[in-house]
Length: 607
Image (cartoon, rainbow, N blue to C red; front, side, top):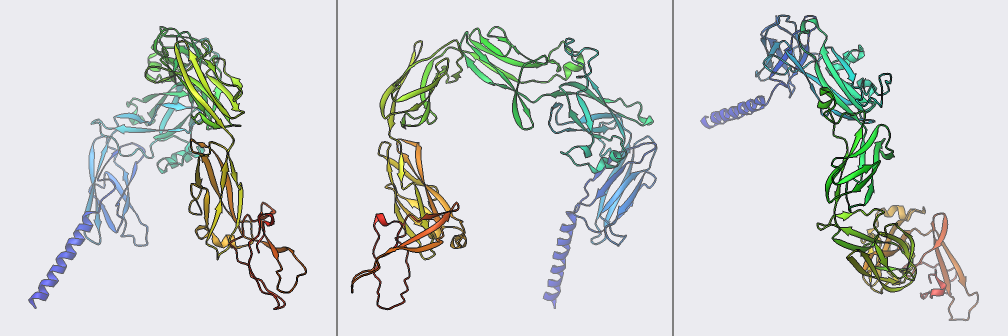
């Protein structure tokens, strides 16, 4: 009996330990909350047990707070959620304790509910720069007591939000009688925004048409504005309102953003605006203008910058509706934004390069469009953008490469290879030079260019020889799907019909086909290639297309069989049927069969 009693005791200990561990993991969503006190409204806050369960709720100070359990089931003694309501109106710090007792395990959870008055307000934002035509931004208030502790919630409290747009400080653009730029921001309700859902915490206030501790702000014009929020309740008239300065900017980009030029040369900048997901070029006008940060190294005229002296500076995009210097008022200076800028570096050239684009390979074939690109670089390999003042000189054989268009500065020559052969190509800029050798071969061709193979469930492998002509005679073969069509470097392909997915679709008489490609490229420039299309189609038509009507005894009757598939609405003969097996039926037993391979002239035939 003793071992049995001991085993029962151990089992109970294990059970109690497991229960204790399970209970110790239970917790409230907030172990401590700080709620504000008002004269005429009662702030609500929801406490709940994270793991749910069955709990009984009690409060130590029914004169301070009221607790209302939320019941999901019929049993009104079982709840894991409770709404805490502040009923105290006394303007001093008080604390109530809320207890939740687990009716299953007996465990008790505790939450300290602290009540106090609001001492100051603040605004929580992710950015203070808004862009035109972007999603509205959420601005959220927070409040603190005199000790600097943040209140847990401001749900149900009405606030007054106000926008005061700053006028442009350039009186030439937007005078006192012009209000077109005075409003740069607007409030948007959450229900009006297609990017947001109405938060539960302010849903009731939004329905009533008043503002809570969260608002949406949308930029409608570029400029700066001050957003002010204050408490409307008389008992908090002493709490100062909170201000935040907001900048509304157009989503602009300067192109190029980083450029190197030669002394005395010029470069034009473009201003691009992102609107509705697309970039649009905008012209400089009375609102936007460009300026140089340091006139020692470059000067600015309109949208063109000119290099003056070796060194580095920046091109700045200015918006006359947006403050950008210390001349603006204090509020505007504090809210100034960083508008787009581009770096411009004036340098001396140290290297000249020459390339054949787009493949960066001087081995090509006739009939190809190319660009001969001549570029200058700095000592640390930064490419220099060449303007109209300078010119790079070049020489090449126009009987091989016919120029179609040449840029003014000679840095780009667009043309086409028109004959086979080789020729040197040279470039020269002041004391710098570069040289390359252009080699042009005949165009690549692949045979057969299109292959149509029948899909036969009984046929698992089929070989096919591809050949290539043109180029330098050295080829690189590859397959788009090597599982279906494997190819060697001699052009011998093997169709693996057992690897085709969706076999059942191919067996049907529809046009569903497995299509892949075989590619052959020049070994010296693999970016120049041609392809052959390989298709696997179900046969839909079988016909005896030719035969001899009479023969002598013990001679042959040759049957020429044609097999077709349908592709793109037309009948197409198969490229090869030599591996297919046909069954012949005779109305008279005087015949016997003997297979014979068809000649090339008889294709597509199967004997």
